[in-house]
Image 1: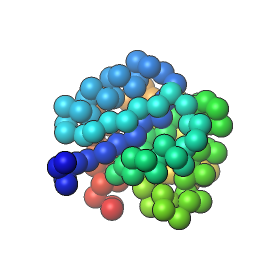
Image 2: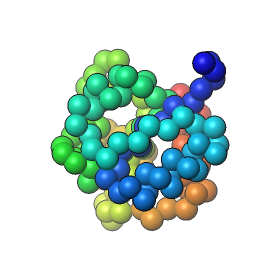
Image 3: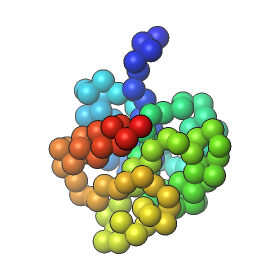
Image 4: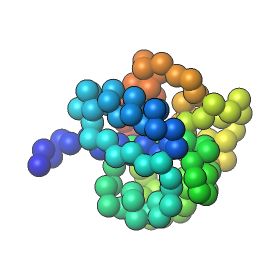
Length: 124
């Protein structure tokens, strides 16, 4: 296994967004793990230990805020940066309430996606 493997987890219930993001990120060398729900989120994230998590606001079943807060309360997982992902107009407030490091408003373009991922990578 490549020790420089970059892993990213995407939580979104929209299969189209998952497949587009997965394709783009894999092209850039990421190993992508995509989930359409956030059930058993601690187990999912613990199994992968990604460099970054992209979290949709409306993810089943608990929703992105509770899912993100659950991760941030976990000692082993709390330092993994979360990019909050939503079409809500108050996304900045939602991301802050969830405890996410940053956010990405939908719809977004690919440069935005790359920029926000790179911004959290630099901080770590």
